[in-house]
Length: 374
Image (cartoon, rainbow, N blue to C red; front, side):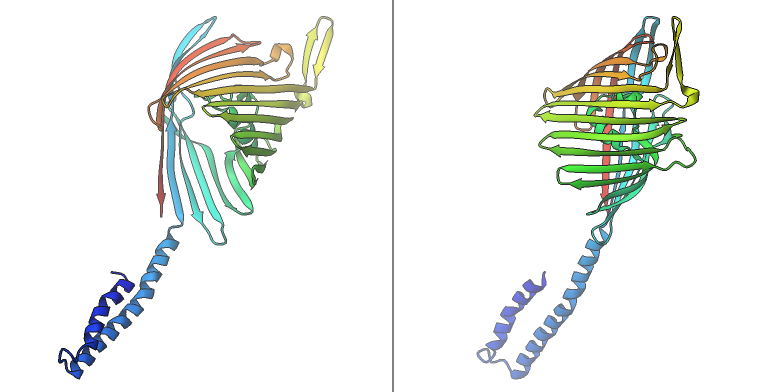
């Protein structure tokens, strides 16, 4: 019973006491009843602050959130070339992770994430880190240190990263960064516009053997996303610089997106290319390449979704060494629930200097996300 309700419950007793003369109650009994009422009210006044204090403490202690999440994505398929075919079990980037947030004072929130690969095609090996970072966010923006997704991936690749395979986006995959170690990032949202900047500080050359600077701007509103991003990095002795653009738009059940990158690699002396053409020797000091990814996804109904993509990669290398290719993908997904679906995929890869490939895969995808607050 609440404090106010108890006071109301005592009201009839007080009224009864005031009518004591009619009931022939002695003054001593009347005084005793009034003393009991006053004593009980005093006890309630003392108890009320203690109850409120416990409630406030309970609210203050609920400052943490923890999510354990993952996605398991085995595939089974056939890859055919003019020299034959092979059948294999694969993995479309399965992973598990932990993400947590902790509310601080002054409107700040600390956060951390650790995410690890689960390589189903290699004995289910577990442990290689995809992400591992800690940061803080608030009105000033978001600041983080550790292995995390680059601006180039978030703004240029992510809008076209829709397929159920490891090597996607189909052209971007061969050229530009995804998750980068030893990375310091800053993100800030200004209404519909997001500004980001990344810097890699890899003094020992670490896993990536490179230092990187990456920045970008993205506009998002009314189902439309448009972005431009630029990065420079050291790739061994060579210097690479790339500018990218992306546009994505949702039209109800239809999603369309495209991304383009213009990429230049300044070759170190030991990596300069030479090509003999007849009596001439051509020397290449700089590689000028590009990537294009165009995708479409259509939700047929609550169960089926169709996806299509066309991609072109050019590395700008001399003819005999070129890794240029075009790729085409068609996928049909069957969604049994929001957390589980099956898919069938066909992909064609046309290479300039390799055997062309035809790939057919089927696969399963199971997602989970369990959250706790404490």
